[in-house]
Image (cartoon, rainbow, N blue to C red):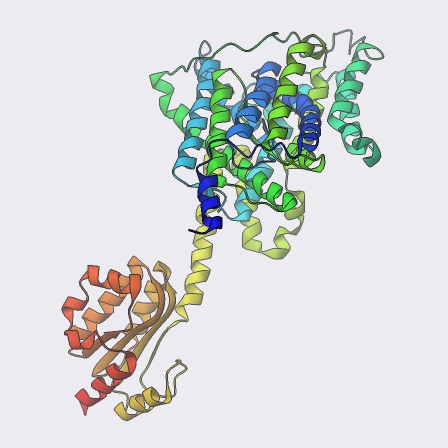
Amino acid sequence: MTPASTSQRASSFRLLNQISTNNIKGDLFGGVTAAVIALPMALAFGVASGAGAAAGLWGAVLVGLFAALFGGTPSLISEPTGPMTVVMTAVIASLTARNPEHGLAMAFTVVMLAGLFQIAFGLLRLGRYVTQMPYTVISGFMSGIGLILIILQLGPFLGQASPKGGVMGTLSNLPQLLSNARPTEITLAVITMAILWLTPAALKKIAPPQLIALVVGTVLSITVLSGGGGGEEIRRIGEIASGFPALQLPHFELGELQLMLVDAAVLGMLGCIDALLTSVVADSITRTEHNSNKELIGQGLGNLASGLFGGLPGAGATMGTVVNIQSGGRSALSGISRALILMVVILALTGVAAQIPQAVLAGIALKVGVDIVDWGFIKRAHRISISGALIMYLVIALTVLVDLIAAVGVGVFIANILTIDKMSALQSKSVKSISTGDGDLEISDEERQLLDQAKGQVLLFQLNGAMIFGVAKAIGREHNAIGDCRAVVFDLTEVSHLGVTAALAVENAVEEAIEKGRDVFVVGASGTTKRRLEKLGLYKKLPAERTGLDRRLALQQAVSAIA
């Protein structure tokens, strides 16, 4: 066994993530920087979700800690993200509406179940398949989530509570929100957005814009703008429970079990996609390679722990990960230190956090929504592919107005159908038949002479490349176009893959040729192609001397038989 293979096996069985002491200074600095960025984001997402600021804070700690300890991407920073918050917001709203008494406990149970789904995906080694979706669908899905996050922040941005009913509830109540807008809180939200967009690059190196906006907005709300709008007090986060969070035991209601499982599957799958896409970004910067299956297990453990203690679900966060790497973080020690530092800050500063205006958090969350929207691809999609652009717009519309599952399902289905259609059209050109030496098949001069010698009475039916199910129609069409001949040679020498549907089409063509009294030869099949035809029983329908030949010998025998 080579050293490389030994190392690979050792890494695949490693329980913990890659924790190194060779870069302590860089990892600690990366962890501190990521913690500073995580604080305002966690507060914003906690309030936006409806679970409260504490849920966002402890979600950032627990998901980040367990994913760093047990994940498969050393420099990845995990925490509540925009997409995960959008789904969690819908889960909380739906379950609390159905069951006001236990809805929130059921929502945290959904987070636990999502973690279990992710662990199962990792154990089943599905990591490399999770992100294998068309980019048009991923882009449309993420852009739709960004728009949802923007819409859901309109109420707090205007100084009011978010209307019930999610996106449609907010849009239908928009005239009322605008008429009751509170100028002071709008001012705070606009100042927050301006800081996030206009902070100079030099200042960003000293402090993240989110933290600057949080501090400036809070100070302004206490001093210059303390009078509130229209004589009303500015809406703030309010008191956050101090100390460690209480254990949230799983709570199930039989009538809502199906909904909870579906929500958990959506949340788990979204977390997998979010985390693994960020892992790819981390790989590209650090020039390393993550372990996707191990990362899913780490993410699952993080979400399981977060749900158990009333925290928001999370995933790999691109912003936190990039900042961590740029600050020197290279091993999982950076993620672990970030979680511990954030936990100390939460335990020590909950009283200060209570004064943060909700309008400031709405501005931060709204900016995240704007950043999630894939503006770059939206601007160019129609120039690259009209069908791709239409799929993206459809997925955006379904995500925002209908349902996340429907959006992904419909998008993937249409994209795959279009792809299969194009592949089938290309592969159909590899289904050819000739009865003279003048055709365009790649055969030897001797084989061309044999066909000419047969004077159109011997047909060479040739398949090349991957024969997917879309090629079955071409096989049938080409065979139906066959005129009068006395012998047919089916050449499968260059077939790299023979799908079930294509195999059945070959079987039908062979059976039809036999029924018409033609001499039939099936040659060149090997590997899985041959095994598939054997399992179909095709070779039992032909004499052994007509299946064990190569193409040249089959043509010789066919020509001799009709002479």
